[in-house]
Length: 141
Image (spheres, rainbow, N blue to C red):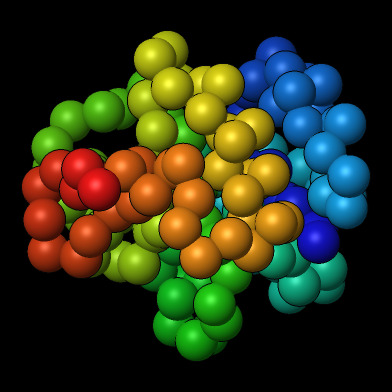
């Protein structure tokens, strides 16, 4: 499976690469530093998973998410942001994000989510992190 990382922080991108590099079957296909580059790379590599920051240059993460979902693709979108306010969580759920994580509190959960996506388990340990459309919070399962 191919992964696209979208974050303007080189430090965060490097940490994500180091965190995820040992997941068997996961290829870190590309890293985008802004929204325009993210959409270009998305079209070129057709990733299965996207880790997306909300506050990125040239096109914010919400607009990137909206554009991706308009294409109708079922790519797994993990929002990883420092903006853990209910407004952003709600908006991401409405736009079709699968997961919403706080960079400072949930960073390491990205590993488990990606592992579970690769294993295609019906009921995985990260279900409690799944965003439910139209809700302001994650669901506890």
